[in-house]
Structures are given as structure tokens and as C-alpha cells.
Image (cartoon, rainbow, N blue to C red; front, side, top):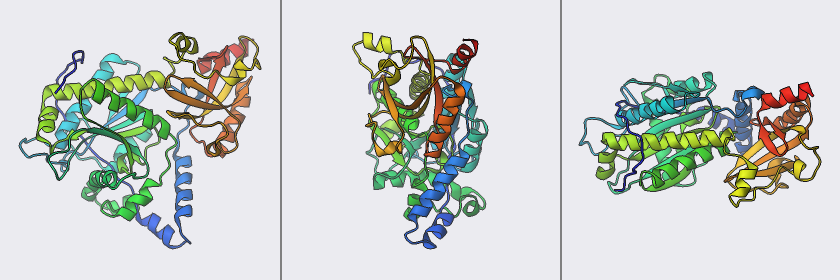
Length: 411
């Protein structure tokens, strides 16, 4: 196994938790309607819209709060691995989760770290989501270890909320969601959701995530760190219906660190060195994600100097704006893949695109004042883009929103 040379090290011990979602209510709705699926999807869209917290304009892009969720805990040991160790999934997950938090606290003082648990205790899945939502977190990461009936499979994988692409993805989610069976009255709390029922899993997967693009970006960065810096087998970024990330109102991902049922991988994850490497990889991925979202690495002139030719902000490129004039736009989508500006996905909105690194960003409007931008934002939200936010530009470069407001006020 190849290990990195430049990973920071720091020992720690700890353990982790998990989450779930409901089914009964969805079934009742589906049974009482023709086909039923369109109504179910509509219900879930309404839920997403009402649950979405609205950030202030000043901190629209700031990544200042992260909630770290160590899977399982207390009476829920998680998977037992090969049973060669007394410590199980809950212990490994907690140890690595606490290390991730330590690295962030030590190196990113502007970020507040919140844990769903810091010791070996059982926490209900819904409460884990509640902790993140109440804190208005910018990122939610749930950390787990994988298991398989076979002792052969190795590797790391990261999940975001969405439809199951394969039966294997669904099995992983169903296994993780079984934690709700340890909760009292779980059928009532999760609308009758049954983690062992595929039909229930399909209904859960219809939940909408306004931050899917950001979740995918963060997950891809995590997987890249695992593969390139720690030398682990990369099983990729996947989508499935995990309860623990289904009720969050921010970018969220569930990390499977590796298979404890694979003896070699279990030895690595149970070791202090292995835990340090994995925690450092997650920290580095989060730092890169934070920089990208806050646009610290987005400088068009620098990208061009490096041989890249990102698409300019169209209003500036067309000469529509006066030199140095401040403009306010509403960003509705961030994607790792380019989307045609006339795509039906944009619901008829007149969008412009800009490329920054590996990301494509799509915005609507170019207003001289904040009030005008808010009206554009309301329009975007009415079209279903609940996660849209206002950005400020000057001379083709993204600037701080509060700085832009001050510049407009003083001109």
C-alpha cells in the first residue's frame, strides 16, 4: 500500500452515528392517486422549498459552519468487520470524525465545527439532521465504514442524495438506514419508512436536493484525495437514498471510508496512521471545496495566464457594462458539466455561463442595484431554483457582496 509523504499527523480516538427517512405517508399518497408518483414528487418539492434556509446576502457564499457526523454509536455498533477487533464501525468512524474536526479547527479558524456526537452515544438519525439544520450549517458530512458479505471488495466511496443507480447502491443505503430500527416510534418519526422495503427506498430517493451540484463537487474532491494522496481504491461518487443526508438543507455527503470486512482494509482503518491519513484527506477536500465555493481560487485573469480560457461573464464580454461598474447577478446552478444555456433545465430563464476551473456557473440578470437583483432572485425561486443566491461583479471579477453594496451606495 502506498502512503503519502506530506500528510499531517495527529492521533485521536472516537466513534460515529447514522440517519433515516419515511415511507408510509408516501405510500398512502401514491395509493390514493392515479399513478401517484407525480403527486409524491410535488409534495417533496414543496418540502424542500419550505425547509430551505435563506442565507444573508453578505454571507451567501461563505462556508463557515460544518457539521461532522460520526456514524452509529452507543447501542448501534455499525458493522462488525472481520470481528478480529473489539472496536467496530462506530469507533473507527468517531476516531476519524474527531480528527477531521481537529484539522479544521487547527488550520481553518474561520470555520465552526459542530459534531453530532463526540463520544460513544446513540443519536437518532433525524436528530443528526436537526443539529445541522438548526446550526444553519454550510456542509454536512456523515462518516461511515462499509461492509460486504464477501471479504474481497476494497475501496472508498462517497454518496450524495438521489436515485439509486444500481441495486448495490440501494443495498448500501438500506443497510445504513437500518439504524432507525433502534429508535422508539421510528415508524411515526419517519412517516412509516421501512429500511428493508425497496418501494420505501424509491419514494425516499425522490426527495429534492437544491444543493446537489455542491454535494457532488465536495464528494468528488473527497474521492480524489482518497485516491491520489492516500492511495486507496476509488469506488467513485454515487447516489442513493440515505436518511442521514435526506433531511439536511445544505450540501451533504455520506462517506464510506472502506470495507471493514476486508482484512487488509480493516487493519488500515483501525490503525492510528490510517485514521490520520483518511482524516487529513477529508480535511484537504473540504478546504479545497471551501476555497472554490468562496471563489478564492476563481480569478479569470489567473486562469487565462495558466492556459485556460474560461467563459467570461457575458455582460462584460459584450461591453454592456461600463468599466468598473458594479453589477448584481443571481447564480442558480453550479455544475461540474457544461449545460447548454437553452436547456429546458433552466425553465425558460435567460442565463449566462461562466467557467471557473472545473466548474460551470449559471447566472440570471445583471442589475445595477441590490433591489433589482432581489426581484430577479424571487423570479428564479418561483421557477424552482430555491438555492439561488445573489453575486456581485466589477470589471468581470467576482467581488464581495457587502463591498459591492457599499460601492453602489457611495457612488
